[in-house]
View (cartoon, rainbow, N blue to C red):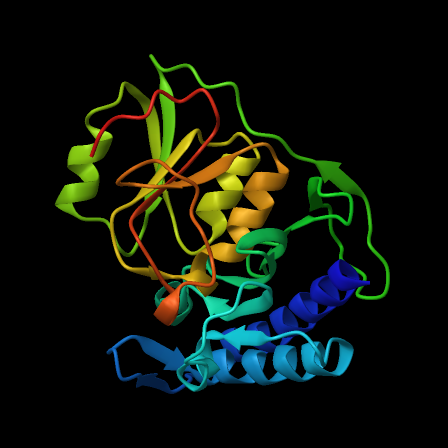
Amino acid sequence: MLIEVMRRLALEAGDRIMEIYDGPDFEVKSKSDASPVTEADEAADALISAGLRAAFPDVVLITEEQAASHSLTAQTFIIVDPLDGTKEFVQRRGDFTVNIAYVEDGVPVRGVVYAPAKGRLFYTRADGVAVEEMGPFDKAQAGVQKPISVSKPDNGALMVVASKSHRDAATDAYIAKYAVKDMTSAGSSLKFCLVATGEADLYPRLGRTMEWDTAAGDAVLRGAGGQVVRFDDHTPLAYGKSGWDNPFFIALAPGVDLKAG
């Protein structure tokens, strides 16, 4: 029931986002932290929030657009980024996603990541296995699901994915510690999914993120056999933190020989 509802709402939100994306110019506003927000963020947030509250009225719901009203921490909750990668959306680059995750005792155990412009849909099934569903997508019934799993990394030739909009010198310096075969850039939580499918081995993030940015992708990666650890001490990234801020982190396929920061 949980993942079916999350999947359907992600697809419905994706349709609404694409209506705005494919339409005439849309308004871009700035939030208090100077990050951009569009009518697509707000429309997707309203749609997903209404659907989740109707289906799961007793579960704490955290969304990016309503986070200011959630000053309390929680350990079990649903967390949503209705449009992750707003900068990619505004620049019409396509690397944006809808993220919905269920966190239990501080661990993201179920997640849906839908990239409507890319036609890619990833989620963790009720049995905990991460899959990529092949389109076209029927909102009422899941289609063909392809179980995904992380790579067996070669530490002499690693595949690295990094942020497209938030790349900096510190990230480049950290990546330089590894023997890199190839490097790609991607926006939003798609980076977690590229590690989950084995398209990349390593994704370091040395920048500010919030729990709604990462929870769904983290859940998908965990379900594919991967892990997300803190940059400083390599312990698992936890959720339900005060203020919903994440520390720097590294998403990886087990077997990557992690370097010190």
